[in-house]
Length: 117
Image 1 (cartoon, rainbow, N blue to C red):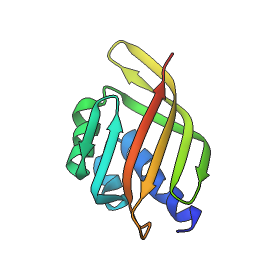
Image 2 (cartoon, one colour; image 1 turned 90 degrees about the vertical axis):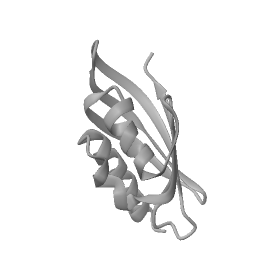
Image 3 (cartoon, rainbow, N blue to C red; image 1 turned 45 degrees about the vertical axis):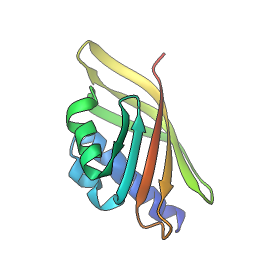
Image 4 (cartoon, rainbow, N blue to C red; image 1 turned 45 degrees about the horizontal axis):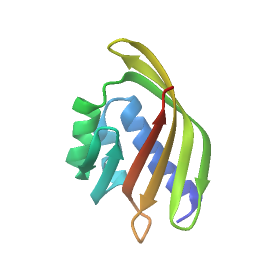
Protein backbone atom coordinates (compact mmCIF):
# COMPACT_ATOMS: atom_id res chain seq x y z
CA UNK A 1 0.00 0.00 0.00
CA UNK A 2 1.23 3.45 -0.79
CA UNK A 3 2.01 5.59 2.22
CA UNK A 4 -0.64 8.10 1.08
CA UNK A 5 -3.28 5.36 1.30
CA UNK A 6 -2.15 4.42 4.80
CA UNK A 7 -2.15 8.09 5.80
CA UNK A 8 -5.75 8.42 4.55
CA UNK A 9 -6.88 5.45 6.67
CA UNK A 10 -5.11 6.86 9.72
CA UNK A 11 -6.63 10.30 9.12
CA UNK A 12 -10.12 8.76 9.02
CA UNK A 13 -9.43 7.33 12.49
CA UNK A 14 -8.33 10.71 13.89
CA UNK A 15 -11.27 12.47 12.21
CA UNK A 16 -13.67 10.00 13.84
CA UNK A 17 -12.17 10.78 17.23
CA UNK A 18 -12.13 14.56 16.78
CA UNK A 19 -15.63 14.72 15.30
CA UNK A 20 -16.91 12.25 17.93
CA UNK A 21 -18.42 10.23 15.09
CA UNK A 22 -17.06 6.68 14.83
CA UNK A 23 -18.92 6.15 11.54
CA UNK A 24 -16.30 8.34 9.83
CA UNK A 25 -13.76 5.54 10.36
CA UNK A 26 -16.10 2.63 9.55
CA UNK A 27 -14.68 1.92 6.09
CA UNK A 28 -11.11 2.31 7.35
CA UNK A 29 -11.45 -0.44 9.99
CA UNK A 30 -11.22 -4.16 9.26
CA UNK A 31 -13.97 -6.46 10.54
CA UNK A 32 -11.42 -8.01 12.94
CA UNK A 33 -10.22 -4.58 14.15
CA UNK A 34 -8.66 -4.44 17.65
CA UNK A 35 -8.29 -1.20 19.62
CA UNK A 36 -5.86 -1.15 22.57
CA UNK A 37 -5.86 1.84 24.90
CA UNK A 38 -5.97 2.78 28.57
CA UNK A 39 -9.62 1.66 28.49
CA UNK A 40 -8.55 -1.88 27.64
CA UNK A 41 -8.82 -3.97 24.50
CA UNK A 42 -11.92 -3.50 22.37
CA UNK A 43 -12.82 -5.45 19.24
CA UNK A 44 -14.54 -4.60 15.98
CA UNK A 45 -16.24 -1.44 14.87
CA UNK A 46 -18.71 -1.75 17.76
CA UNK A 47 -15.83 -1.74 20.24
CA UNK A 48 -14.35 1.35 18.63
CA UNK A 49 -17.74 3.07 18.63
CA UNK A 50 -18.15 2.24 22.32
CA UNK A 51 -14.77 3.79 23.05
CA UNK A 52 -15.58 7.00 21.17
CA UNK A 53 -19.12 7.33 22.55
CA UNK A 54 -18.78 6.02 26.12
CA UNK A 55 -15.26 5.35 27.39
CA UNK A 56 -13.04 8.07 25.99
CA UNK A 57 -13.61 10.81 28.56
CA UNK A 58 -12.40 13.55 26.19
CA UNK A 59 -14.49 15.89 24.05
CA UNK A 60 -13.79 18.64 21.55
CA UNK A 61 -10.46 17.03 20.76
CA UNK A 62 -7.91 17.93 18.15
CA UNK A 63 -5.15 15.54 17.12
CA UNK A 64 -2.08 17.23 15.65
CA UNK A 65 0.17 14.63 14.05
CA UNK A 66 3.79 15.78 14.08
CA UNK A 67 5.38 12.58 12.79
CA UNK A 68 4.00 9.79 10.63
CA UNK A 69 6.36 6.89 9.93
CA UNK A 70 5.62 3.87 7.76
CA UNK A 71 7.52 0.61 7.63
CA UNK A 72 6.81 -2.78 6.15
CA UNK A 73 4.57 -4.02 8.97
CA UNK A 74 3.01 -0.93 10.55
CA UNK A 75 2.73 2.83 10.69
CA UNK A 76 3.31 5.06 13.70
CA UNK A 77 1.60 8.39 14.29
CA UNK A 78 3.06 10.68 16.93
CA UNK A 79 1.70 14.03 18.01
CA UNK A 80 -0.33 16.04 20.50
CA UNK A 81 -3.99 15.73 21.41
CA UNK A 82 -5.90 18.53 23.12
CA UNK A 83 -9.44 18.39 24.40
CA UNK A 84 -11.79 18.86 27.30
CA UNK A 85 -12.20 16.52 30.25
CA UNK A 86 -14.66 16.82 33.13
CA UNK A 87 -11.97 18.47 35.26
CA UNK A 88 -10.54 20.84 32.63
CA UNK A 89 -8.44 20.92 29.51
CA UNK A 90 -6.04 18.15 28.54
CA UNK A 91 -2.97 18.41 26.36
CA UNK A 92 -1.07 15.15 25.96
CA UNK A 93 1.51 13.55 23.72
CA UNK A 94 0.42 10.39 21.92
CA UNK A 95 1.97 7.64 19.86
CA UNK A 96 -0.36 5.30 17.98
CA UNK A 97 0.92 2.12 16.35
CA UNK A 98 -1.29 1.16 13.41
CA UNK A 99 -1.34 -2.23 11.67
CA UNK A 100 -3.09 -3.09 8.40
CA UNK A 101 -4.66 -6.16 6.76
CA UNK A 102 -2.61 -8.22 4.32
CA UNK A 103 -3.94 -6.22 1.37
CA UNK A 104 -3.48 -2.99 3.36
CA UNK A 105 -6.99 -1.86 2.59
CA UNK A 106 -8.03 -1.42 6.21
CA UNK A 107 -6.69 -1.02 9.75
CA UNK A 108 -6.58 -4.23 11.82
CA UNK A 109 -5.11 -2.89 15.07
CA UNK A 110 -4.34 0.39 16.79
CA UNK A 111 -2.34 0.49 20.00
CA UNK A 112 -2.51 3.85 21.76
CA UNK A 113 0.24 5.20 24.00
CA UNK A 114 -0.41 8.44 25.87
CA UNK A 115 1.79 10.70 27.99
CA UNK A 116 -0.25 13.29 29.84
CA UNK A 117 2.39 14.09 32.44
